[in-house]
Each structure stands twice: as structure tokens, then as C-alpha cells.
Amino acid sequence: MGDYNVDPNYDGPVRHVIYCRSDWATCFGVHETVAEVQDCYRKARVARNDPDYFPCGWLVEIRTEDGIAAIACGALARVTPRGFECEAGHEHVHAEVRHREGWEYAEDLDEAHQLFRAGVEPRTMAGQVWPA
Image (cartoon, rainbow, N blue to C red):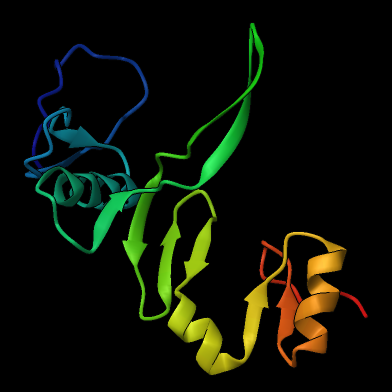
């Protein structure tokens, strides 16, 4: 089984680790779960400018000392066949896919009504169909 580099007199809980060979700059080389290793490799792909992974640019509101500010989400995002999605749950569908599927985003009820009258299915920014 190996000694896991543990002091023979150690009396604490057993802690197993997974050694990571990712080239991500801030990786410490050791993770406790497979999910952490996968996350590290995804971040390394972003750092290498892999076109399938990038920081999410979705604007989110945060509270600051001066009030509310909008900043980029920054979570790891990946390209999908329809657009992109990020680990924080944001997703975007490209315009050509929305057109082909016959729907479009509507920011408010007025815009939803205009889209509906034009024969396009209106959806909220979260992707749900606007109520009639």
C-alpha cells in the first residue's frame, strides 16, 4: 500500500491525496478528489488559450462600498454545439441557433409581445418561455 509520505508517529486522520500533473500555474500538485484534478486540468487549458475553454464574460451584479457594480462572471466556460455554458450556470445560445429553432431572448414583457406578434417564440434571459 505504500507509506503515503506520512510520519510513522502520525496519529491524525488518514488523508489520501491524488498527485496532479497539470501545468496550471497555481496548482499545488496535490488534490483530494478527482473533481479537483479535472478542474485543475480545465483551468490549465484556459491558461494555454484552448479555444474550447475561456473565462465567462456574463455580467453579474455585486455589492460594493459604492453601491452595485456589474463585473464579468469569470467562471470557467466551455464551448458547446449551441453556444457556451459556464460552471456558474450561465449559458448562451448563438443567434443562428436561436433563429433556426424559432425563438429569441426578450428582456421584458413588451419585447416578448413584439416577438410573439412577429411569429418568434419569446424566452426569458434564463431560457424559459415567456408566459402568455
